[in-house]
Image (cartoon, rainbow, N blue to C red):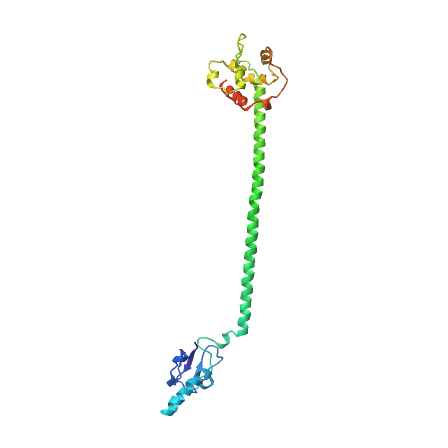
Length: 258
């Protein structure tokens, strides 16, 4: 709905007023009017929207003519721009289309950039866990290998330690010939099994496991002791890999009680 400004008989500019509410008594063919979209103020008789209004007013004046004093005629109003909108500032239709195209292109470019950035970030995120998993797997393998190597080294060191006899370590009695230590190779040793045994006895019990696997002792006293048994056949310098889990646990258990 168009809204117009107009110059009244006193020379004042009034508006904006919808065309349908325009006061007929104030509008004459010479009244200057303006609305958005018009380049300048124009007389009402030159504006198509006011021609119907003026024709209706003429018909009414034929029935009851009224003269308008010359003093009340509107003064010439200089052709000025609207107090609200300058005609030159209203974009033409062609300019509007160009601006719309530019805005559309900018929006599309922005969306494309966002999509590309999101895809690249997604690709990067998805590749990181793979590298982490590979690193974790490599680290786990390293830890496992280190633990295995440590276990083997510890067992081997224990075996070498087993046949070492301290100068102040008590010797077993010569008449002591244990015939029941084979159980250390078959089941887990308990505290009750160790009760009443001396440090020397515990040393024999612990090395019984190695002797049963044919370990070649470095200590002469152990060589002499196990050499008296027909079943002892020294063949290996390292029997760690031949020990069962029960035998390994028994070695550690007995050693803690020595």
